[in-house]
Length: 171
Image (cartoon, rainbow, N blue to C red; front, side, top):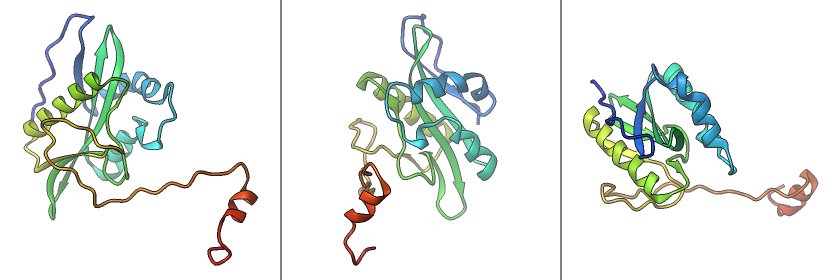
């Protein structure tokens, strides 16, 4: 399947680039700097995961990069999973509980999702699964899966305080 890139836009306009395993290495440093800057980022947000999924599992990987004024302003990692049992799907990212668009603005987030929907159509996948931690409204997203539960425990300052915080039956 040949992937068509979004036509080039003037330097001040937002464009979405589709990076593949061949073009990703040249953009990896900029994507990493964006994904990990100015916010606590989950481990799954690191673009290097795409190489892991490609090398370890053989998935075709894509990074959708939103660029404005020559700078990265958004990012969406995706893996094209092909399963004999479940068919083909495009997911951000498989085997991780949550992952999705990394962006500071709803406009950029919407444009990245628009391009992900187009890419899913181009690849002819059964479904597109975006694993955001909170609902992301978008007209092209028709289903929300609420069957998974993600629990977090705020960690205290010390291991001793953590241990004392558990009921005696749990210890």
